[in-house]
Length: 119
Image (cartoon, rainbow, N blue to C red; front, side, top):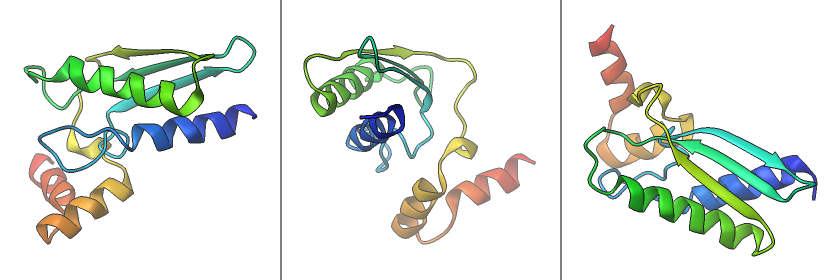
């Protein structure tokens, strides 16, 4: 597999991981800031954040993300997921797919409303 195919597998795996408070996966919430793939060394490094600093399940989400990616790629891959807090997450980081999921759930574009209120 080439790096792009591996990255797509990683994204698919991350889409199976959810923040327990928001019914959208961590990828489409915009919590994943970086995905680096080293095909030769079979290593993956991911930087991701959480929606709020005081999140009591932050490390459970990180562990779930790491486990999901390891499962998708196989035991011969080394996967590291690091929790980062900079830059801070905002709803503006939610992907268009995530916005659609939330709009379908709540009946309006809550991200667009948040952006309008913050500007």
